[in-house]
Amino acid sequence: MPGMKVLVIEDDARAAAYLAKGLKEAGHVVDVANDGKEGLFLAGAEHYDVLIVDRMLPGRDGLSLVEILRATGNDTPVLFLSALGSVDDRVKGLRAGGDDYLTKPYAFSELLARIEVLVRRRGAGQPQTRLSVGDLEMDLLSRTVRRAGREIELLPREFALLEYLMRNAGSVVTRTMMLENVWDYHFDPQTNVIDVHIARLRQKIDKDFPTPLIHTVRGAGYSLRAAPAA
Image (cartoon, rainbow, N blue to C red):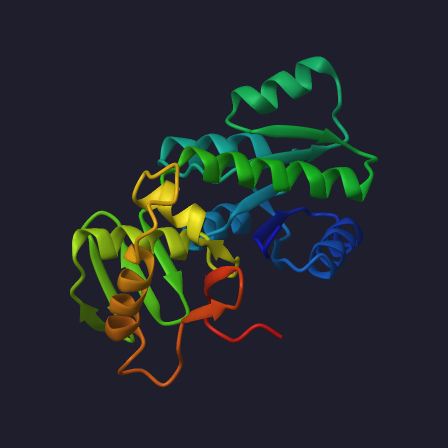
């Protein structure tokens, strides 16, 4: 999974350092709060993909910390991490607004897998409204496209084709895939419709910029990416 921004709220310095080290080695960005008050402040002031919260914290306990976050509309996924492992303790954690509960001692690989699931689940529940590849940006709500801040006018079919390419950025998109997903053709009508629209897109999003984004993959199709393949 791409790098996440994680807040660890843990008062045990050794446990916090162990967690932070493992998460950073896995490619994630980590902040650490050593008490409940600092954790509540950071969780409300910064954007995080997931929070790892100890139940027993000085300043403010983990349960009330998460309850306050939920009451203020903060829906960041929370994994409770605690030595309190009874069924009643786990139920209290989930009812306070936690999304998952892991008891100490734990295997780091399991913790990593659990937070990845939480982040994937959250992403799946929220419709994507913006796409970006390099300096190319698409707003799906306003139906606008900008490159390096400059607005680019596209016809509806050009917009649909570019959206499909951006959703599959970095991958090779074949002629058949484009016909089926953009034109809803489940057969090849033997026209040059793909070539015409790709040429138009290149004129609009590549011609006046130093770095081309649409790349021809000989014998396969096209790929939208910010840099040439290695």
